[in-house]
Length: 101
Image (cartoon, rainbow, N blue to C red; front, side, top):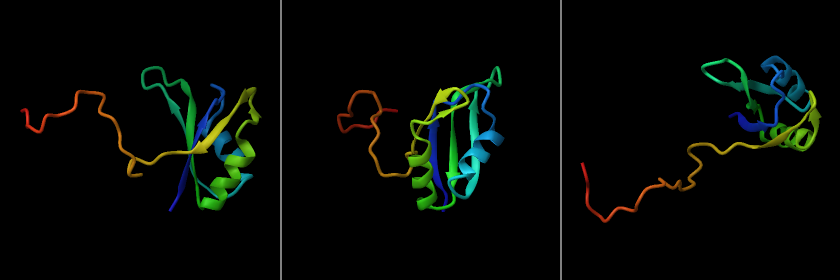
């Protein structure tokens, strides 16, 4: 099972290949992705890296959080998974027990 890291503060010039090579120095990288704007294709300044083990993910987070890469300071933390069991707020009004269709 891969362990996903959120990588914030990426330089707009940092490529997925650069991200993969960089994090490979901390352990086995399964995937690396830089999030891009769907209209322009330009980097949005953050991405995700999946490390092979929890130990590799922890090592990478410790190694790269706060480090300057390509002129920007990275923020690296374990990403929250959608199935983590955390309650999410819907942002709307609470229901009164009735179904509204």
